[in-house]
Length: 116
Length: 115
Image (cartoon, rainbow over all chains, first blue to last red):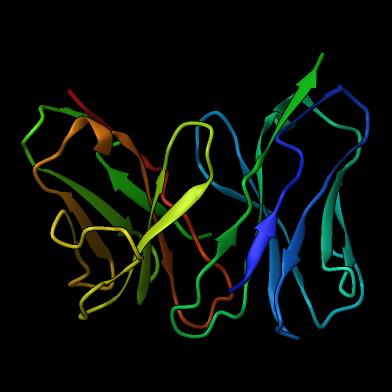
């Protein structure tokens, strides 16, 4: 079974700084999807960024980028120029595919606080 | 973008009563629905998966007779917590998926408090 591990329960940085959240996963699959979700205080889950394993290029979305190391099974999220609105729980997630009822497997989460 | 609604957003009920939570996909057809439970400061835990018109598949440790899931239409799924107890107090999130869109959506969640 696939597992996702986030080793940083909490992180805190100053506004405008860059922060990196770590995520490792375990799978025997060759093709799969990886995601970072944000859950702000409203508790609405928001997709931040996703990576398809067959793509070698790291995904980026504005201030958010990932460092995908397939061989190391590592998928870290970098937030540049952090903003107060980035304060949230961040979950790393794995999914084998979108076929059928394949499940999202979530990590334990990292609580990120951006300080003014 | 896809719009998912959940109703109610917050419900308080007495121990022993049943509560129904509705999840609607407003602008797409949800062929598969995932229901999650989230305790404070914890990750999302998958409770069950359902396909439209079929019985739900429950995760190990989740009582199917206590958490009744109905997915009778492509735009509505319900989760009924029967004979609720204080330990059922949690945040419940529905998450629909539709074929052809490689994305999984999330409802805004329902906070259940059992007194």
